[in-house]
Length: 223
Image 1 (cartoon, rainbow, N blue to C red):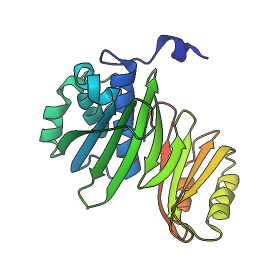
Image 2 (tube, rainbow, N blue to C red; image 1 turned 120 degrees about the vertical axis):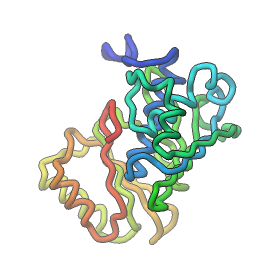
Image 3 (cartoon, rainbow, N blue to C red; image 1 turned 90 degrees about the vertical axis):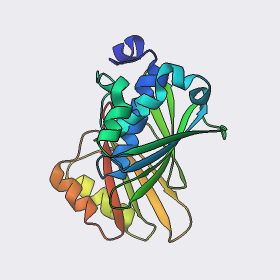
Image 4 (cartoon, rainbow, N blue to C red; image 1 turned 120 degrees about the horizontal axis):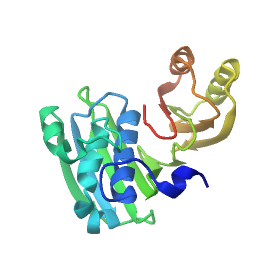
């Protein structure tokens, strides 16, 4: 336990779970989409988010994250208006939990170029989040450590290409998880690493044959 765990995050809003965590869920979705501010977003609130989230400002917080705001941004209460001005169409609904943490949101976001992302994430308290589903694949990552999310085709050599580039960049891998929908289909690598990867290293990762996208998330900010 560190000082951040005791005091909680610096934030705007009444609840670290329903507000700060919700902002970070939006930020994570924005980063994983990788196209800046989405054109359209539909967000389903689940569990406690659905029951009490509106009173805690959860919808505004989720919108703020999609706009690229941090949990301490004073513009969070005004995020619906700012989203309209940015041309982002946002809608909300409610869905039952499917075994996730009670503070959960399911997001479908669409970029201006038509690229889409489906993501399910939970707010664990203290501003911490956990992404549990991405584009139909069950995943598990929090971003508490510097994290690389590599979306790729499930094919031989892709994992060794990624780890080889990281070794060449002198980046140590703390944990690594692999997910796929079926052999030869879509796959995701989630690598928690000891330090960020330089821009040139990210470019080399993105140039690997079979890699669709590479996203970097750090402990407190989705980039």
